[in-house]
Amino acid sequence: MTDHPKNKLREKGHNALAIQFCPSCARYVFYPRELCPYCLEFTLEWREATGRGKVYSYTVVRKSVLSAFEHMVPYIFAVVELEEGVRIPGRIIDCAIDEVKIDMPVELVWKSEGAKNNPLFRPIRDK
Amino acid sequence: MELRGKTVITGMAELAPAINPGGRTSLGLLSEVAGKAIRDAGLQKAEIDGLLVTPPAEDSTFMWPAQVADYLKMRPGFLNMVELGGASGCGTVTRAALAVAAGLCRHCLCLSGGIEDEQIFNWGEGTMAFMSRAEIDYELPHGPMGFNSGYALIARRHMHQYGTTPEQMAKIAVEQRQNALLNPTALFNKKSINISDVLSSPLIVDPLHLWEIVRPCSGAAAVIVSRAVEAADIPQVPVFILGVGEACTHNSIVYSDDMTVSPIKDSAARAFGMASFRPADIDLLSLYDCYPITVIITLEDAGFCTKGEGGAFVESHDLTYKGDRPLNTHGGQLSFGQPSYAGGMSHVIEAVRQLRGTAGKRQIRRNRTAFVNGNGGIMSTQSSLIFGRENT
Image (cartoon, rainbow over all chains, first blue to last red; front, side):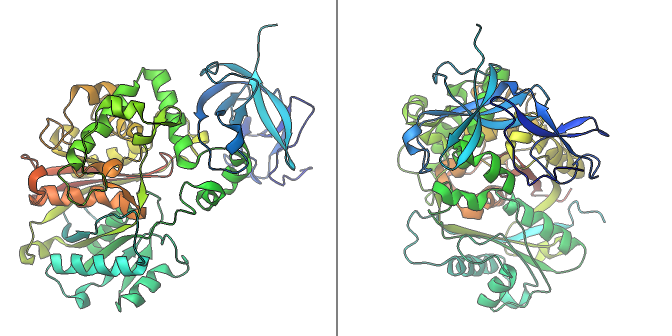
């Protein structure tokens, strides 16, 4: 296995990310692990995800006690179901708080925040 | 080993929850409540030969069962710490029943509670103390509000899938408050509230309002589990442990198969199976309530109504102590308070009180059986119990 996971997501271009896949189970895995949680073998490889998905559920945080987020309220904390079938937590940006809906199509966008580059999501709007 | 009816709750005690613990320590609270439970059972401390504890809120977890035993000058022959989050209280009772039924001890003391540390529970970066590595790496960068946002995600999804309404959720907080008005030790027992009060309280983490969110505090609770044969010799009405069941399907709610379905489906089925009971046989519901949505999902998954009908069930039943479906007659954690890990024990304690017939002004009339559920994390680990006044 190349590219042994350090359990970190990596940026793959502006709107894609690498997630793990087990070829023998034919299943994607998220969050990153050392072994496939289904067959418990060292089979995981990194695949590029489309970065597209839909909102599985969300909450609008009105009051945050996390110092990095106090000034951001209200913001949308969501769980997104990727096209690959796995769920990933993420904030929805470029989206009014009354615009977000369950099943809303979203796409990934990387955003540098402090020392980190975080995978966020924004609505896919009809062009 | 058959477990049904082999063990009985012989003693219990609970301290009044407190916002300000006034210089008390966790070990001090635990020893106070232990003494009360031992006297309640009519036992001597030297007769307690089993000790199960839930994790400390402020002390080091290292050798915690021994720390507690040493502070109380106890010499248990069976001891352990049970960490199942909010399900820990029920979890200690299940493990005590196992140990007693297997003959490892005769009287097992289950202790939980402590001093609330505002610095870690649900507050600020300290909330990491309650997070797994995966939650710190992949959730924290997006600003989740601890347990609040996890349950908000569940509530939002439940509303989307089944049409559950804010009013239905608020009614649980309202009727539990009515119960709390008759509980002298509840944190919030002065003022009744109505549905519009709840829905006009500040929206903290959409769709959860302030009065739908549990209030952490300090406190402690103790239960003593003994062999069923001891029932004849104890001063209290015996409460038999007729069924137990546990289940876990996920840790972070992000990765549960369906956020609206909890492992209670399995834990309750196991408990009902052992007891050979159906939901219709249950007189009292004592259900872990960190938020109203927890109660709705428990009602559905334990089989008191069909999936998705939890909101309608709440709407069509009177959940107060004098109602047709008494639920959380102590006020639930929403009105009683959540004294650390003893919050999940408060449901056990109230069930024992009601089955003994010692619940005072909020005593329910039909009090033969109780279903108790403990819920750990974000609808993660579940521990279900079925109690009966008779060992039949």
